[in-house]
Image 1: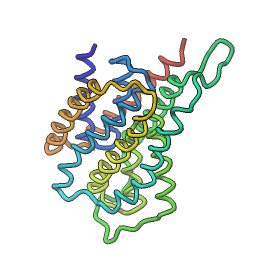
Image 2 (image 1 turned 180 degrees about the vertical axis):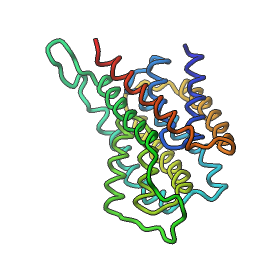
Image 3 (image 1 turned 90 degrees about the vertical axis):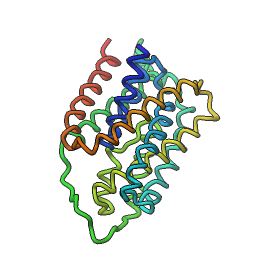
Length: 264
């Protein structure tokens, strides 16, 4: 099962490298169902894995000039603050179990998995339905600061709770809220994801989660191998073709998690 898990981590990196936003959504299910990692602990691992692989994946975008640093900082600041706060203060203080109904207990781990499954369903829809955005370069990039701040807080909070990078939300927001061209939105989103994920992970370092650093680094190495290959394959594979198919797969996985965790 571990061999299958490490192969799956390579596939996760491949999808992140090829399709960008949403590619890391498989990290937590791989950790939970193939490595038997506790769901809450898996969100911490996921933050590190997604963060470090996004750093690797952003190199090719830097070389191509598809990273807008100012936009990354403006979008990233509220998101980083939110994800760090959630990991540092909210996650450790969530009661376990949250509540019980008759003999059925709603545990902290179950809540994380249900939230993650719902996020997977939302992510799958954004990947299946082609967004109506202008891919051409705009003359000027504008910033709606109040909306950007609110968007950053929401996405950062979601990232902190479930350990997902949130690229499927960040990319459309960059295009729609600033007028950033699609290619630059993808590259810039990787910088935002890497910053908020890695800084968010530091919020877990002083907590009581039993982090296995050796396992985390090995898993991350396989994922980084995948994203390097995936970034290379983007020269030959159009992500517009792969993304809907991956979206359907993510939807099936989300429904599987809901069924597995909620149906006795």
